[in-house]
Amino acid sequence: MSVLGKLKPEAIWHHFEEICNIPHPSKHEEAMREYVVNFAKKNNLEYEVDEVGNVVIRKPATKGMENRMTVIFQGHLDMVPQANSDVNHDFKKHSIKPRIDGEWVKATGTTLGADNGIGVAAALAVMEATDLVHGPLEALFTIDEETGMTGAFGLKHGYLKGDILMNLDSEDEGELFIGCAGGTNGGFIFTYKEVDVPVGMKAFKLSITGLKGGHSGCDIHLYRGNANKILFRYLKHAETKHGLRLSGVDGGTLRNAIPREASAVFVVPADKAGDITKCVAEMYEIIRKEYATVEPHFKMGVTECDIPAKLIDGDTQKKLINAIVACPNDVIRMSNDMAGLVETSSNLAIVKSENGKIEVRCLLRSSVDSAKEALEQMFAAVFELAGAECVFNGQYPGWKPNPHSPILEVMKQGYEKQFGNVPKISAIHAGLECGLIGGVFPNLDMISFGPTIRHPHSPDEMCNIATVGKFWDYLLETLKNVPVKK
Image (cartoon, rainbow, N blue to C red; front, side, top):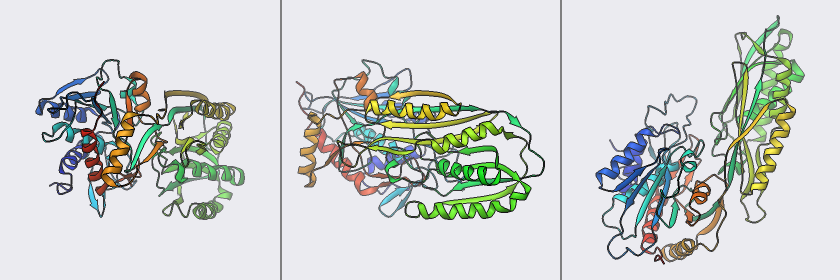
């Protein structure tokens, strides 16, 4: 039975609920692509699938609107797969279970996928409607936005015919975004020797849970707890005080999600074992108080476990712990030009040991290219000193704001006329695909907007119902007023 069937506008919520029923984590968008292609066939619309798996659908103008600029709706087909630790959910097989909670649509223990399912649903709703007024339309659906922007990187000249790009992947109704941050993936590899566990040791597993996590761009300014930083803060303390020897670590899952959980298995001399529970409790209480306002559900616990087969050699352990403790994280600099905007940040996303290697992955963001390069140097300095292999890749550009954008002027005036107040003009500290798309199609006039979505990239993700209706009405009114093509 439909859970969202009675929500307005019906067209958007119908498509969004169908999207929830289709597994589509990043790099596994095949079923979503098939859904979009079948949609085009069903509605007798021209479509094209490119070599990397992006889809574009084209729709002619309604009568009398043929002379307007062509609008391109743009969204991505993938979603971030995050679930609470007590939820058994295979994102490659299981559907998302949406539910209505007051003014919000939420999922059940997982990410909702409103990022970017709502934008995709809105584009499909426009493309199938027969009673709207609009000029020529294209809808571009890209793949793998969340883990590497593979789809946007793969776009080729000539694939798009339009003049105006409306990115439907922002998350604050009443704001028009005209710029975004660029990003770089930082990868750091430690190679370690597996050594025997000394005699007379006891083993423990330390777990960090209950953190909110969230989007490493949109939520980074909230200074939420980073499970990896908290974990290694304790490891540093216990290494010095209790002679801790590390066996393995597992923290975080995605480079663009603030890590919510992390764990480590370690041993200490048996005569120190009695101090561990007390020490962890003391450290937990210290950190709990530090994060009490933003992380009310934070937990830090330790349990005795079986002696592990091997340990990480002592030299690598010391270098790893020091590097993670020193690793830059959270907001690095706020913008001098736009109040309240984060300019540069980093997210210590993943720390994982396995088979003689420890992999550390971070996402570095900045709206200033030179600042992003300086942050890369900062990371390289820390991890090269620690003897790790350093690799920076997946660089994507920021989107430089154009305050004189013609579609911006149309949408500013239209919002004020429609809703009685002026929209906020802003940039976003997240990696929208506009920067890459604008690099391939430099003549595009671009803007990004959407309904209100909170806590994307975490199981707390939710989409405000009323703002979806407002977003839809605004989108339709904007289409009526798209400039004439000169």
